[in-house]
Length: 253
Image (cartoon, rainbow, N blue to C red; front, side, top):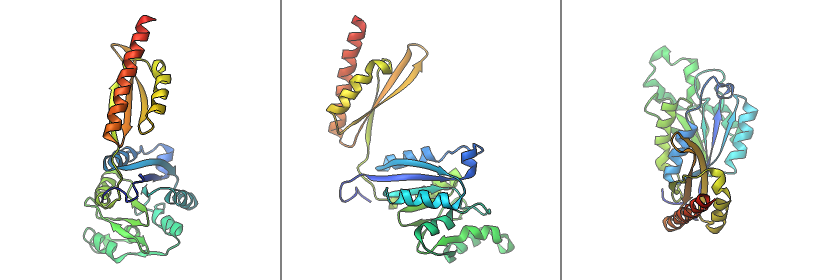
């Protein structure tokens, strides 16, 4: 879809569900992928939360996030085991019943024949009433989309397949553009000046990211972002002007 009708940014949050993430046993690989995907299509990721496999925690977080942002993407907790309770928690958050979905059952019957589609695997076909399925080409077990909440698997390859499925159906805003400038200066040398630039260019944002260069020592990358290409160009030009002034001053001192 095209840019949101009222011109307001389209926003999103990610709700990561799983004890294994909080314990450190599993390292999350989904947040960065989703963030880059959404940025590329003009959706602003504003918040990420991680909650355990506890119904009350999932429901509370989901209700807080879905009323605040255009979309909420959840990852994890829709597998075949007893602690995969995301679907039930989402149904509770929306106040709707949940049951085996014939569409989901048909999908899993393509992969699991006869007794292989056992009670555990049938858990993956339980979908809240009124939800649309989010299919994936990797495992066939679906996620679902209800209201503004998109429920996806935690396994990265399956999550990515689900995101590809829903991506073209999302409302999108004007894409955020960015430029990166190597400062060749330490972050502390340009901090005040960046603050002045931010005030002078309210339609752009300025981020400073320090790093260590083996040849030159402490250094900084400045990333300028704006949705307007002309304003981005003006802000980037102002950064170059500022850096020239700072380097001249440092050379003198």
